[in-house]
Amino acid sequence: MINFTLKQIRYFEALARHRHFGRAAEACAISQSALSQQIKELEAALGAALFERGARLVTITSFGEEFAQRAQIISRSVLEVEGLARASRDRLSGRLRIGIIPTIAPYLLPSILNGLTQAYADLDVNVRETLTPTLLHELAEGRIDTALVALPVSEPAFVEVALFSEDFVLVRPLDDAAKPVPNARMLREMRLLLLEEGHCFRDQALAFCNMPSTRPRELMDCSSLSTLVQMVSAGIGVTLIPDMAVAVETRSAKVAIARFDAPRPSRTIGMIWRKTSPLTQQLLHVSDVIRRACIADRSELSP
Image 1: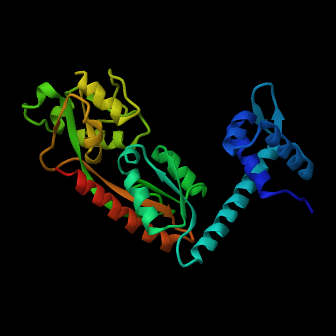
Image 2 (image 1 turned 120 degrees about the vertical axis):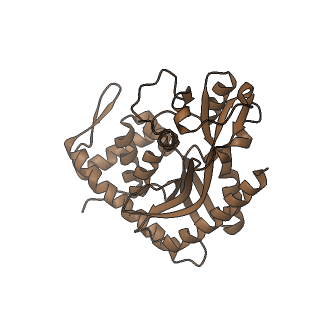
Image 3 (image 1 turned 90 degrees about the vertical axis):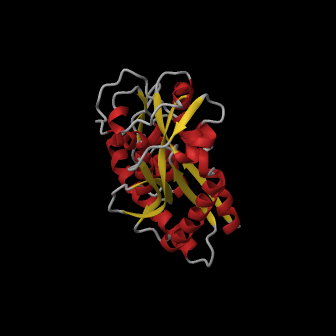
């Protein structure tokens, strides 16, 4: 019988993902020499090489590619067993891995964590902030338990639970505060600043203006709402931001906020998880806790 450990599987997956011993060791929070030793022991147990070691990069072997597919199944099964164990308890406890997109995290995460802490004293919440496509991939692979994203994601394998909806607002230079609020057609003719590709908020803003995402742009796209607002403050153009971001992003910027006439651009924020997750009932309760925390937070920020 071939003997190897779940820890070795985890180290193998990290090295297969990063293709670099140093980065993989850092991701696993162990020393590079310890990681190397564990990989060697795994290869010895299997009787075949998983990686080709180069001067700078690591290349996975054909056997390593095949093993990676089985390792993913093993890891997912272990996570499901862990989920079953948590689901069998009366109260949710232990580790809960939550993904969240960057246009939500800075504004609602403190309230969300506070709400979860009050509802679940024994819960260890791990937060992963990244773009929607990455969260969907990691959720499908079982690397996170649930994610807060803009709906719909339209993935048949996921449960979608709407939490709340919010409007987008126009951010423009302070000197333009008295001007009429532009409509979607007028916005197409303005210098509209956007988040870089990969952000769902960019696609939503373009959809409101009826502009194709492939349209060439003469202006820089930005990686954060903060940068967009500061560029507007400098007189470079105008932008859209979600209502939840207004209080934080405009407090130190010389900009004016305008709200659109109906039909207003908006988005629905929701929580998603795998339909096969054994934590489904617990996650439904978690979604209620998060909804209440978010609504309370937004009520406090409303003028």
